[in-house]
Length: 114
Image: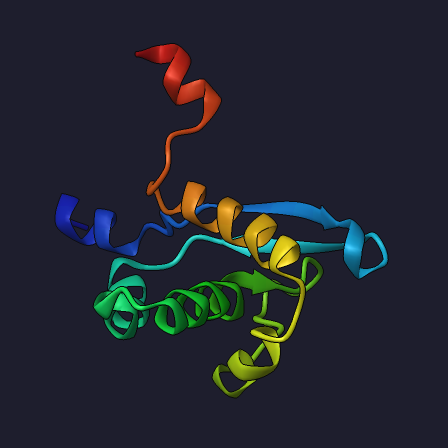
């Protein structure tokens, strides 16, 4: 197998389990999105309006939250409007972890390295 084939075959998407206290202390798995998937869900929020920002956060949650036992997504794309009605605190908790996993914000560890 060539180096190219080896690299393309690797699963390089990270994930991390978190507890969501507002959801009865349930544990969920937050998965990093592929570059393509992240760009696809970022397009509607590109306008920067308030509604678009809320929808973007709900889309990140819908795409990133998985069942920790199976690794399968919990939510469907059609759940985005219902997620927009959930607590902003919860969406931010999950959204912050998702953006961290996707390399969009620096972690405390990253800041210590610099």
